[in-house]
Image (cartoon, rainbow, N blue to C red; front, top):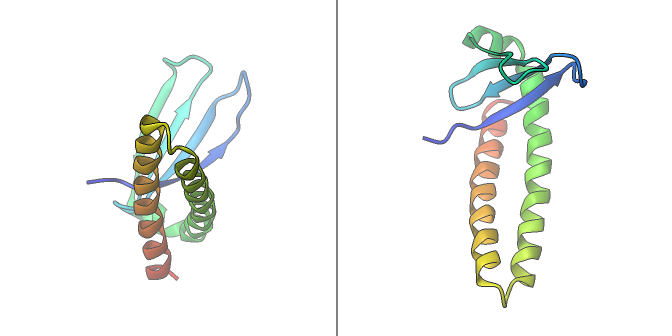
Length: 116
């Protein structure tokens, strides 16, 4: 099963820790991933469903942003497809990405509609 997520990033810089909060829309949980300067300095913690529900306004906003990005990606995929007539490899790759982006877009729109 494909899991769809939206992301939020806190504190980034070359010598700081960066924390990503991943809102897993499929499981309705929040995963927090903290990365340090070293790649070995990584901590992943799964947070409860309660935290997901408490941040639902943020999740809705991030889903809206993701929908906008996916619309742009789909538009770009269509441009690549129209320009890739003579390059079969690029054409297949663009079609694969278009299909993947369309599936994610449908999921995001359905999630958004069900969580107004």
